[in-house]
Image (cartoon, rainbow, N blue to C red; front, side, top):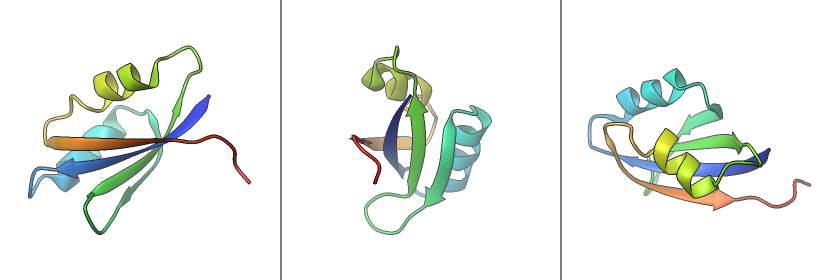
Length: 78
């Protein structure tokens, strides 16, 4: 499994609905509300056999209220 962090910018007023929809899909390890340019940040473990871009776009990018996302790949945990 590959660990990636995905940040979400949500339509104003829809952050909690987006968070609920993300959890309903049962694919995130952790989900946080954040301050700044992004509204939510998720820790996601993507199977090695999956393309990260396709996985994020198909599993998370289709949620109503998600305006934009930013995916950060990880390499090594210390």
